[in-house]
Image (spheres, rainbow, N blue to C red):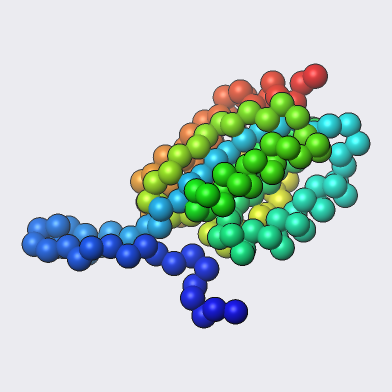
Length: 169
């Protein structure tokens, strides 16, 4: 196993002059691809199936530098995934073909240099009643404006109730 950190920062060209001075207090963020989606669980998907999803994610995601969270409640999945573009897109292809859910709706996707929303979570299961608090805590600790914006959008979608429709038959 390598001693290299799993989430290393990209190399940047050295800055000079005013740019170097302006950049002293700003950390370098890695280039991350992120996506958030909702889907409807098919009949028969229960807590045991969700536990299997989490176990597989925790086993596989670290090797691909993927982090995120999964919320499951009232027959609806909400998942946030972040990491290198190729790995996240490969995972999304696998998820789209997964027979345990249907009607996948991508809510957000982007690629930019920023901090991870959930850097220590290879995949964390969050209870529906706790998602608002988890997102708010992440927003309060966000150092990167892009990260704060992504979290604000997710909180706004949650507050608007726009995600509720997906859970209806």
